[in-house]
Amino acid sequence: MHTRDEILEALDRMQSESAAYWSAFSAEEFFAKIGTAWSPAENVRHLAKSIRPVTKALRLPRFVLLLMFGAPRRDSISYEALRERYRGKLAAGGEAGRFAPSSQAVLDREAVLALQTSANGELRAAIARWPEAALDRRQLPHPLLGKLTVREMLFFTLYHQQHHIDVVKRRLAEAAATPAG
Image (cartoon, rainbow, N blue to C red; front, side):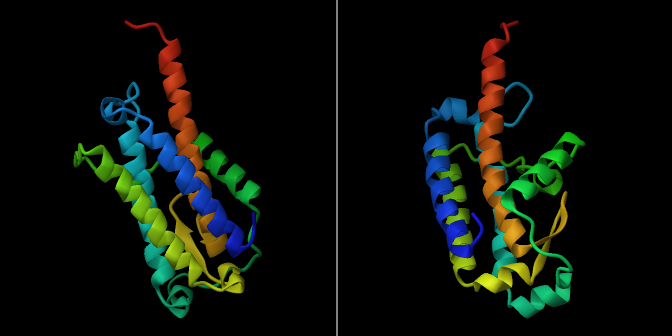
């Protein structure tokens, strides 16, 4: 995956996979913490919260992004390289910070799922307005990874969604393997 159109296709696939995964939880499971970790609902709210600033930035005129964040001084790295860099930052203690889910408790599963669906749809529409070459000529700040080209930020956004599904799967498996009390 590298081109804008491939990123858009991957985002569509991720939205479908994500919706299927998160929707499979009962309402009770969806809102239940996994040990001391976030609930599936909190993971979904975190994902929507992290997608929205990317969408907002992509809706700005490209010259505004240039004025705000400068031009990249390097080529975009691959999806795989970005993923490994992010994993390294997490292993070094990186956390969600201001992108942690807020404490407001929306207890309507469909409303929470709609947040992510909406965020992904808006992101997709914003990406579609960008020409291919511009993805490497503008950059955005990431709280853990520093400045990323727009292409890299889109790679991150895709991987981030898969990462949270994988984390929830792992934590659920660990919780199931741990004897109760």
